Amino acid sequence: MAREIERHAREAYPREACGLLMGPTDASTERAFLRTVVRAPNVAPPESHRFQIEPAFFRGVVRASAPGEGIVGVYHSHPDGAPWPSAADREDAWPGYVYLILGVRPARPSSLRAFEFDGSTGRFGELSLDTAQERPEARRGG
Image (cartoon, rainbow, N blue to C red; front, side):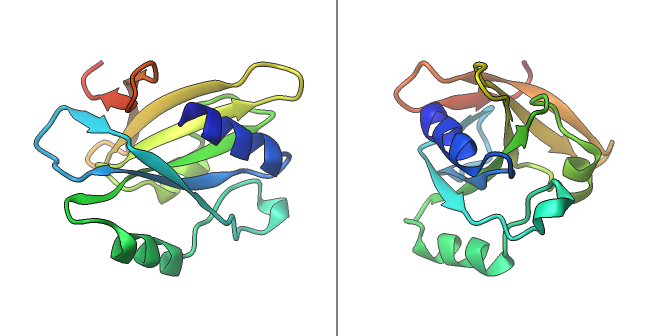
């Protein structure tokens, strides 16, 4: 899955790549299991240096999801930037979602980090990300 996100980010470069993270929607666990990614078209104007996913795309993905499965987060890239949430990311973030951010620079390895937005504080907290498993997971609480 991490390779698919990196491939998408390199194909989209110098624009931000974006997509949805799919997995079980049971919020009672301290882990967010990520089963698959769904590439989304970035409909933001190229000069905006951000990403935007159409609401209709979200609705279509939700309708097509199997029972008990759904959107558990969003991924996007930061071309020529660091894999840390930006002010624009904070403006558009939804509490409870996992956010994977990939820093992409030409001819350098990419760096992928996971975050969750806390609506009460308006801040992102970093999650530990285990991509070595068959199904990657993001752990809340470090």
